[in-house]
Image 1: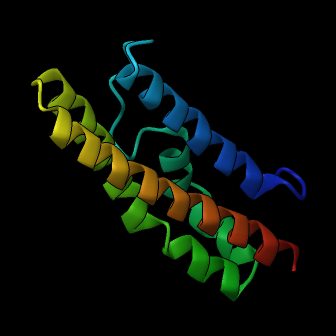
Image 2: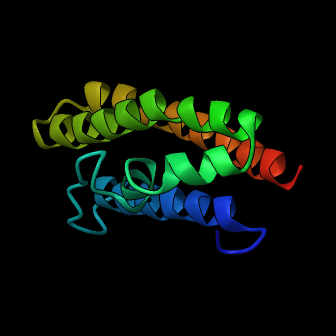
Length: 120
């Protein structure tokens, strides 16, 4: 692990991705998003993450496991927000953005809890 702030680096990966999606929705970029396996957080979740979380203890592993479903759904919601915006469905896009932001809060809170659990 990359020192005591390791899980905070994963938090930063998520925030950077969210910022790119938001810029696209605000007309300030052309980022189309990625599959949930292919973003930096996803590569960690489906790569070295399980082993690293397990080495941080059982609480950290449980928190890690709870990231999977909201992370996948976050990506689905971000793709929906972009697609609905492109289709001219402002209300649909806004609903998807609301879900995306709610899921983002869940991911941020869980990553912060994971960092705290790992420090122990």
